[in-house]
Length: 597
Ligand code: ARG
Image (cartoon, rainbow, N blue to C red):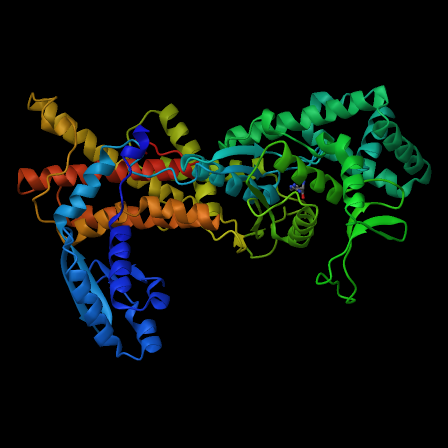
């Protein structure tokens, strides 16, 4: 494949392999295969700390072992190595040549994939994310799952995995009995004209009636039975409710710019036809137990506060199925039909026990095997600016659409304060892109397990670790490159050397240029770390470090007014590669990289 030919081995990988080889020569086999502990370092380019823990196990003095490793490393004839020294208690400081660095960057710049190898091609990843509930609006609780899932879809897809998106919406269950009954009892009222917010209000009033009026409760329960039996009138109303909700979800997805489409929806109702079959299979395999008339799965080590095993409720006493049965059918389907090798569930951490029990049941059933993996990609809670769970002033859940409106208002103000000289329509588009990027970056730069406070003012700021800062850095680089093109044209050599950026190998680099260059060389490793840990914040943090390194570089290294043509060429090429890496990285987080703002 052409793509493979372009793979660029990062210098960090080179260094790691070289230290590992030195360890292999210097140490007995059982010690040689340990982590060479190579890190970026401020003193040299890289540092290996391997000698310290290994010396303890060999009885050597750390500095002596480090000296042996140094000699072995120096003896490998590595073209990129300029110096290797022992320092401190036994660290190895490793420095690389500018030419090696520039050569790597040149290869990355020449490749549309920026030299990132497709490492996930053997994976078929099923990503379950967003999963809102019908007749309710997307609210702040769905933000995290939706954005984390989407970023993973993009990163894993870019790394060559085949990705299947699944939106497991809550479109089934007893609540539909009361909803449908409520609607049918109000024949004159057309909720459709009012859309999903009317549905949400309806949901509340249906619930009130259900709790207060025993006669309505009974009619609602009969309605569930009718719906489950496929009654035509009930099914027609159900379909309308689901359709209306889905259109509302889709509007928010489009506004957020997430990849989910109506085709990705496989709601709870989709798995209905298989529930009996799943129960039969689990029963045949001896996995189900009867407990007070219900069918459940127990686990010795999953105990409740009363020290009794917590049941996974597969079939209720009344014969009905719930959330767990549906998820068992889902995981079986994802493995058998979708042929997933890696199943990811981007869902709130509060569902951890549910997923643990579902996954373990799927293993017992033989659906999940050694070659397949299921991971609950857990996320924490979004709090309000006061650090408490985010609520409206009236105490209700916060609609996602309202959050985006708030962010947009704020972005408009901030953009208006700047003197850009841009037309109103363009400013409005910039505010839109900045506000969505701000919300996404704030989410994706937080470790997904942590709770965080939704603070629009902080998110939509041009400084600090924000999406706007990254987008702004991208626009600054774009503007430098526009100026360089204009200059080139003015000198009537539009298609001359500068039109195609290129690195010139034998020009020495300044420390800030090296720092930027080494970061640019780490892009692939960052993406692989995201794929391994399923933590998009690693990419978000990398992009921030990259933007900062660029800012440092640009403050001390004139680009268009560089002293020599070679240095100007390299600085321009650094601008090009930084811009491409930022744009690609932001794109993998689902964030737009604008040309101006
Ligand atoms: N609809 C569920 C909720 O709002 C989330 C579903 C997550 N996915 C799953 N396969 N259980 O809590």
